[in-house]
Length: 246
Image 1: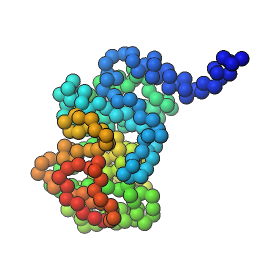
Image 2: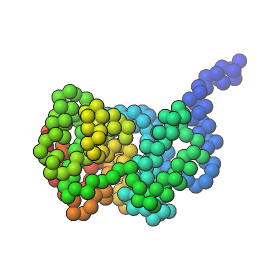
Image 3: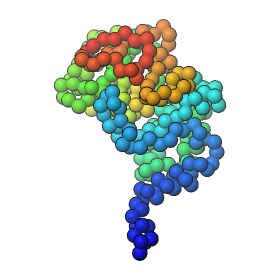
Image 4: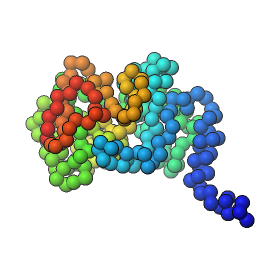
């Protein structure tokens, strides 16, 4: 009876997790060594932006990518970003909670080919001036969103290409947000949380999900970081940045 009750107490989610971690994680080729361990949903948050994220991304081992593929930091982060976007598209189509590692492996190799072909999901603008806008503190209030909309329609944005940055929103949520503001087709670029990584640009692991912004833009581009009034520059955003308030 006790064994029967114990068997019934194991939920479907538990079985799926066990099957993924034991039967798949340590089998197959060495591709899994490029992935960090799955991040639990409860730990998928940003302390700086004070938000809980909706989907846990697959973080890549940037150090291993640099050593194995001779990738740059930029290539490694772009690969991580592209992988998460395409992985979630597959999940939506198949209505699966997670993908088998065999599918992840195929996706990984497909995207490494794209990286080698210089194909990117985040396409940095070519303007001499780039306006990087941290949006997270303004997302939860109507007044905040109005302030952001006003900034995006201001004369400052005529001086440089706007690039939204979020530690709270993923790729699809950024698209939805821009669509709700009627700006999805206005060529506004964005950096969602799938582009943050717990590695330095040299491939050293650190206890912070961060991004080296200089690595995604040309050296002669001037980068202005727009921050909501009352907020300091987040430690997660690293680079030669001129800070402006809005």
